Image (cartoon, rainbow, N blue to C red):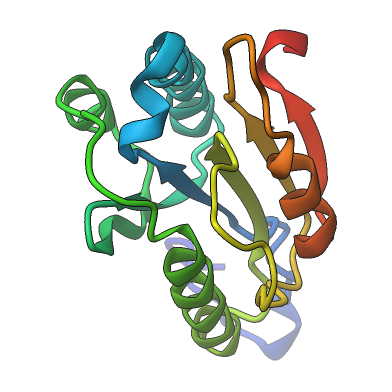
Length: 178
């Protein structure tokens, strides 16, 4: 070789890229008025701060969807995790209704489109909710491994979050067990 340039065909070396596929963490946060009770959302914020830090260190991509008010709202869609997510987390407040079913449906459509664009990407789902929904039927199939973290607190618990996790075919954990 002359100056790093190949001179003959034998000088060319073909190497497969050894880089692994990116990971995408889709986080859906229920920030409805019911999550204000018994500091449920405050505790969830601590958990989310740790999650954002882990995603940043692992160079994962993040998608963040908030379910509060009248309709779900995207905060981040498939960008590399950044320290700026903590600023969003500090300003996160609870209020309004629970458009969680709409958020799950929208997330399902978004994941399908994302798989078409990035077929090798490894997708993970995290749903943070107290499960206080009027109905837990008509759930979309999200087709990716996931975890639902139940943040329901207080003396009277409805326990709908575990039903929601079962319907979504994802794992279930209560925040107190983490």
